[in-house]
Amino acid sequence: MSTPSTRSPAAASPGSAAATPTSAPAPGRLQHLPVPLFATVMGLGGLSLAGRRAAVVWDVPAWPAQALFWVALATFVVVATAYAAKWVRHPAAARAELRHPIRMTFAPAITIDLIVLATAGQDLLPTAATAAWWVGAVGHLLLTVVVMSAWFGRHDIVLDHVTPAWFIPVVGNVITPLAAREIGSVELAWLSFGVGVVFWVALLPIVLRRVLLHGQSLPLKLMPSIAIFIAPPAVAGLSWLALTEAPADDPVFRILFAATVMFTSMVLGQARMLAQVPFGVPWWATTFPLASASAIATAAAGRLPGTAYDVLAVALLALATVVVTSVAALTVRAALRRQICVPE
Image 1: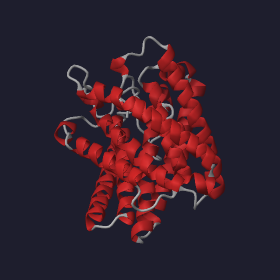
Image 2 (image 1 turned 120 degrees about the horizontal axis):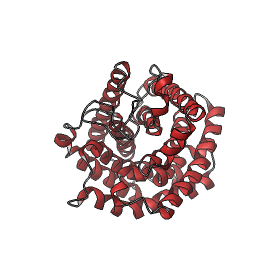
Image 3 (image 1 turned 180 degrees about the vertical axis):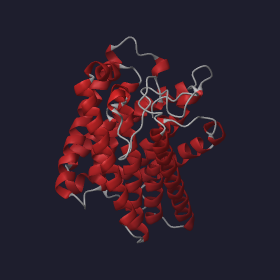
Image 4 (image 1 turned 90 degrees about the vertical axis):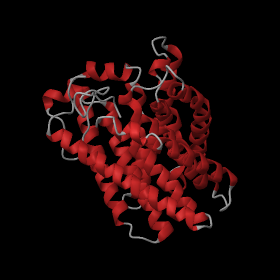
């Protein structure tokens, strides 16, 4: 999800880099390992959550979702270990990255990873999942305050720095309630949900202005990030169900599901333009939102009458699977070609 270059598939993003369980960066390039790399875990873990929901709604095997959880967990271990090493060996580079007006918005992806992994792995590693949920939930609220304080207090952060990634620090709080009843705290989940929803509503017109208005549109290399518009209403709808145990025909769920469908349609409508964007880490921005869209569509299929919901859910789940698999494969290829963890 960092910015790519037109010169090489992954070489020019805000710290262009990607990692998988098999592609930890070489020591000489460690200082260029970026915090947006944690978006890989969100994509893999998000697809695991979608598969987990599909197993419940359609009574299909759960092992694909479980396998994806283990892959996501292994990826997190590799990325977190490498990033911790960066802080030890190149602290100046790490601090500079977290002060960067664009890259700083990706730091809270670390705590989102913990919440997503806790939710996806609650049945497989319940004790560890509980600990991860608490660290992720509390940590993300704290990071929300830190990032928003920077937005308030720094005059060097201007409209040109606004991207859909601004949803990550504050709206990421709506992910907290997904497993709150099973392994966390419903009270803390409601607090996080309130923060996430209010600031989604507050940020939405600002980010839409940046993306839609002539002269304020995103550069081509950042366009995959428009998929992030899909995630807030999709995850908010799922969290609303988790918090309220709402009836099948709940109007709030329907509204959030409708918003998800609209934003998904908007992103798919840009397919021709997106096809022109060279591959790079920013393409991971498409993975978690599409997985979230497939998850809420699957929830709708399980709650609402009509085969159209099932058709939509299957289509979105298939699309999310193809996108996550493709982006992961291209990331591995870029790693093998040493096109990642290079200077911007």
